[in-house]
Length: 107
Image (cartoon, rainbow, N blue to C red; front, side, top):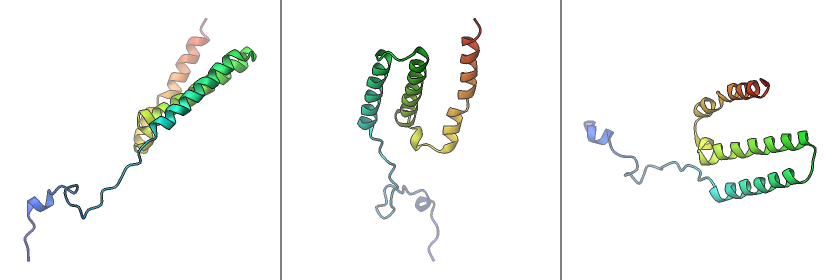
């Protein structure tokens, strides 16, 4: 019987070619950038098309939220992180919304 050696236990799995290394998905940064560019062009169109003020504001805020989600998911790498980290990032958003609403209605 062979004795279990600590060197064997501490071996680097990446150095052993027989151990498969799981691959993480690679985000498509240029595709996301193109999406953000298109959303920016849509925002410009909405701003200058002459819709009512309320419709323009709702559309621009919705597009800005969608763009912020894309940036957070891909450029901040939240898409490939555990759910726990996503929850930690998203948890303060209701408080931020309440604070912004309080400031806007205070005058």
